[in-house]
Length: 204
Image 1 (tube, helix red, strand yellow):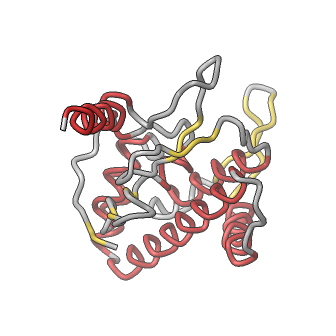
Image 2 (cartoon, helix red, strand yellow):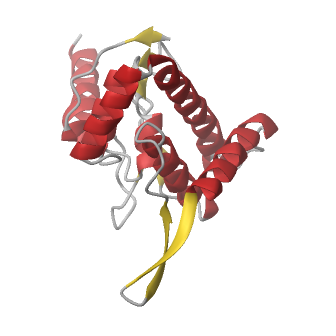
């Protein structure tokens, strides 16, 4: 998988769920895949851009990564394993196909890890389940992504989760349009590019 250093912006966050946005850190899954978070620095920039981490959390995670690069590499490798499993799981569920046990085992390991990191607290007379405050900032994005993935997959909206049909894209997103008519991850990018290619093909 080819590493690409991406200048992340809000335009790149199109999944409608942070777990799908994680999947979308790879472009061209089925053709010539590019990894848009090739290192921990790129991943933390993405995590901040996508809202998985706050600014202070991102800065704290970056400091931890600098102090312990080996731990940072392990965290990134584990998140990328989750990313690959999610691509497979979401694709299988979209097309009503059997899911691979190895992908389920990856998700289940993250479920266990998340459960061990959470605690029950009371705030304003209401019970909340939150990640413990002493969890390393480096671990936070993976845990939050696992929580988002479990939430999405428990009630998977198969009719609304789509894959961008652009040849070099393959990003996934939740179609929130009333008539489920959204086709592209981003009409201004993949949609217009496809229209341009179709026009050129017609005029040859």
